Image (cartoon, rainbow, N blue to C red; front, top):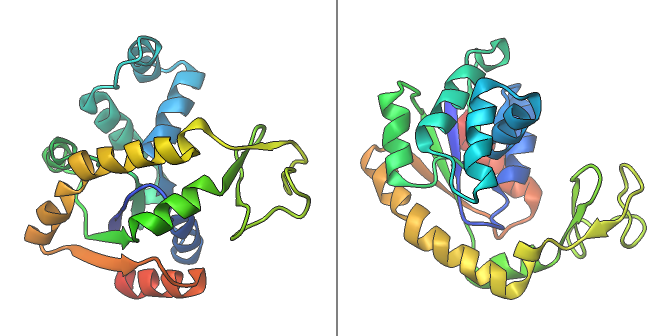
Amino acid sequence: MNFIFLGPPGAGKGTIAKYVSREESIPQISTGDLLRASVKAETEIGQRAKNYMDEGKLVPDELVIDLLKTRIKKGDCAGGFILDGFPRTIPQAKALIEAEIFIDKVLNFKASEKILIQRLSGRRTCKNCSAIFHITNIPPKKEGICDKCGEDLFQRDDDQPEAIKKRLNVYKQQTFPLIDFYEKEEILADIDTEKPISEIVEDALSVIK
């Protein structure tokens, strides 16, 4: 089965996707990761995408969809996949349908704005391996140092409180309408993320299974 994990920044959809991916043996697919890998590998699509990225422009939806179509043809997607953070707009959702990338269930991860700001402002990222920690929820063993590779942790610019508010406003304007879109498709399930992570994972798995 194919799933979309939908939710605002800080809702934890990426973290929960990792748990579900391992449990269900289906890949977690991030279009951002696909784009970066494609650019690094200097594929045809990657080179086309890089031209837009270098100019500070958004990569056109058709290029992202082409990347997705290539990715889901791989063997590890035979049993399904999780789209993490895509689509973000109604046109992207419609583009998936036109590309015959069909979705069985959309999990909508919900949390209050207060909780989202608290989570994101406490997030720390490894400069080397991009591992993510949280000063309260997932603290590193040694303050400011990555458990996995020993490099320094830092706070991303977009995890500053003012930047977070702007990101949440963008989500409300561009992505929130997808909730109504998928409700009408009768494939939306809400997941309350203001719980212990074990309960959130359990709720997500119960929807998926």
